[in-house]
Length: 264
Length: 357
Image 1 (tube, rainbow over the protein chains, first blue to last red):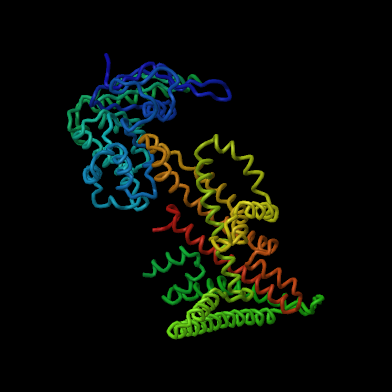
Image 2 (spheres, rainbow over the protein chains, first blue to last red; image 1 turned 60 degrees about the vertical axis):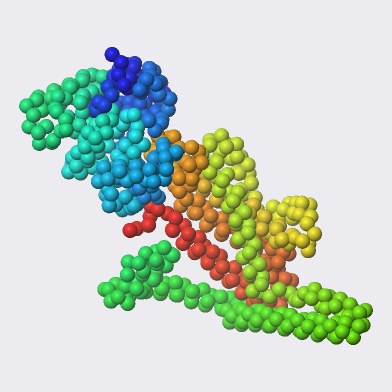
């Protein structure tokens, strides 16, 4: 089967003073167009490594990645990235941070069109009223909303989210998960999100891909999430298979943890 | 309102005055008085101790020109220099007024002669008027003129240095190849004293700046002083710019990489703004270095400015001129402090991170 996004035989090896260290090996995954994948695993297992390789920010040691029929070469605006920290440029307003990408990707659009694009995505993340503020005047949650707007506004082929809500308190995190789910509902983007939050993965993803513990981490188990879209948190939580799926995921993670201790 | 005042004081580096404002607002009087005592009492005390030590030294140290000047002598000589300047300005004004009158008289005479039909005499009068117009007031420059010359020179050198150092610094910070290539040269030239550069600069200026004096924009002496300042003051800015650019947060660079920004946009929108606080810290050091270098260069090269003033007074060798040198020392110090203040204000106004809301 060929997917919209293909990661085949992907591997990452770092050279360390103690010799080469294989972090990820033989990682295979096909992602369909419009699909939302959550990549789950213990911290340090290499899930972020996979994401940064897909983003082009990290070199690929073995195998390759194809997005929409083309093998990727380095980073590019066809893959929008939302980092764990909002990573806004502190000397620019929220608006300018988003406009930076829009101006780069749509250089031939008129000024008014570009402004409309920025304003549309600002509204989508609920920041219309504070888009001319500097990042330091915004809360962390609001900054991450800008981060989302920036990634969506360049209208990428796919979206990469590296634990995007990991730094937020749980209330803000749930709020932003809903914002993200909303935009994805409207936009139908293909997305890969790295997370270690089981509930977040279940709420957002179509498939949850769980990785084995590193070194030599690869795909360990894939769970299909059957909840209908658009999803509402209450209905998701009340779904008959929710706790069953959650149980399966936690079981897998605990098993990995045990294996790690046995190896050590 | 009061927040604005405190922010202003913070911006211009006058935090010491904050308790005064709070006192006027009637906020915790005892605490504010204690703070004022620290902020102003301590400096005042040190200054008085300094004056005391100086007075003691001046009455005990005997030089070949008499006693070392006391604080009082220095104040007196500052007054003398100021009066000389005022007098000089007056004399210059008087000279040009007299010149105007003379030209007017000659032109009038020429008109009368030409009406009488004595063309040769009229031509002679007109020629005299032209000659009169060309006469320039000449007197040795006053103290204030020397100060202005020095300030002009230091800023010219500083601007040249900045225009060279910032772009090269950005290149060094972004490209490891450029950094590796330039590093040895930078390491070698950075510690060179201005006094070593000066002869080379003077000779090169003499060889290359061959514009005739009446057509030249600058005098040679100005150019050689300014270039010496530039050569010595570009290093701190260069080093700081390179460091600031090299230490940009990786996250910010990743933003640029993901968007595949072209080099120029990356430099303009990400690298420069990010490194700006460091660049200004470098510029501040550079201006300080430049000011110190300039005085030395002026002394050695006998180029107009405060340094030349100091040297001339030293050559004159009297108790008064010694006091005038001390006036110059204080002037140089106070101007240097003022320049530093200006740079602090600029530096704080560009640092996006530290400014509180």
